[in-house]
Figure 1 (spheres, rainbow, N blue to C red):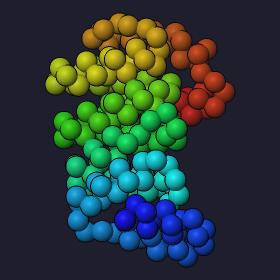
Figure 2: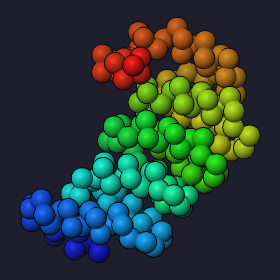
Figure 3: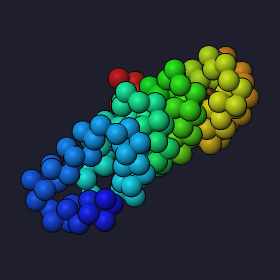
Figure 4: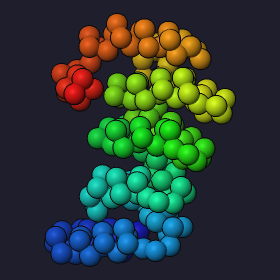
Amino acid sequence: IAALARKICDLGTPESREVLRSTVEDDPDARKRAKYCRIFADGRGLDRVELLKKFLADRVPDVRAAAAATLGAPDALLTRFVATLATDPMPEVRKQAIGALGRIATLEAVEPLIIVVEREKVEELKAAAIVALHRITDRNFGANPEAWREWWRKHRAQDLTQVDRAITMG
């Protein structure tokens, strides 16, 4: 389906893209929807951001996890959507979301990752959040959420670009 999808997207007609998007989004098979996340992870065509937003909110945990697993630095626009998955009821979804936040590596991910350090019961996931925070901030306060919060309160406004400041500060 990947080759067919790319060919349809290459045609460039809005109608062909809409047919493909609705086919992918409406597939009743959760395994296929999870596979679509990986197929379109290369970022070519199919309005990837819109498709992944839908998959990040899918009712099936495996689809949410697969969508989060495909994300990286070019996906900063999806940080808010991924951040909500960092507290998902399913550990695998949380794991993929925390990893994605670390790969996306935008300052918008700092607050949700501090919440993970503060509340996460699974030590492996808490450790992953600490690694992601270190990657984003170049700081290491370990599993001390108070230290992370104090540092973030002092540095959030001065370290943010104007765009990040507008997004983060509301």
